[in-house]
Length: 332
Ligand code: AVI
Image (cartoon, rainbow, N blue to C red; front, top):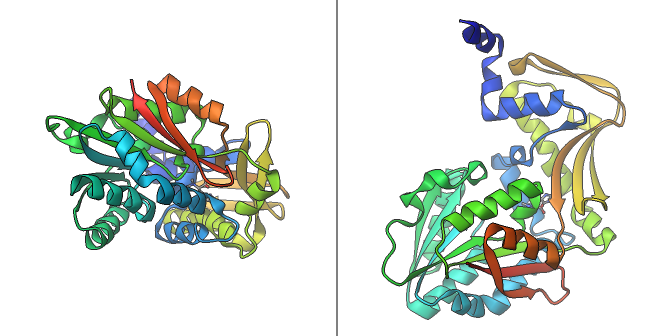
């Protein structure tokens, strides 16, 4: 009886993932919102545009590494017939380099892509199977940030004799999580593998502060639009009245935590109302909503994380400027 009363006092929207996160983050001090909120259809489109910006070196650096070393990576991961699994489907162009290398080596390859977005998976399947004969894409719709445990057989099905798995976690997606969650994701991946299988982890490395700041505050304002899109989404889905013109995109380098932070700074003192949550938020002038962390790593930090998750680094590569690292980690 008591529990029913408490639950019915909460607006229904507070029980949806978006409502719960907005309620938590905007009631908290300092204010924050989780970065997964960026990725509605428009946010995913803006992120693709970010990857092509001159300032956003991340995607190009990783592409350079994979273009130069895909055959080596696949050869080092093989030792049996290779199956490739990936967390996050993305646009598939970097993954395509590895899948092509696998097709060159073994004639064909099964690729299992895990993503929260069924649309992103459909697109990856269509593009990869059209462009790369020999690749069979098996989409798996799931939110890996809540754990991989429930995927069970969907991830790999029954293993064929001599099958080896190569798990991809690239794009420095690991950098958008706090360390305990990053470690948990790596441990969840490890649990899906057998000794001798491998994980390819892509991580953005610490570098000159200005290069980092420019990458997250580009001249064309695409990252600013990406950041503000979180507010547009909340307006649309929860009926709030955020006025985008009263917020400024901010990118900061936090030296102590070795991370780029993205914030939305309130330009005036204002009150925002979120009707679906029956929530009023008063923001002071210059108060910020912290929307994203993007951690930048040293090689030692990556080695430490992988070690704690049950992996040994077998091989590692960087791009020609040493800005991005790709780590082939052996499940031990
Ligand atoms: C998806 N992730 C690795 C990007 C990053 O660089 O942290 C997200 C991003 N945020 C702003 N620009 C790109």
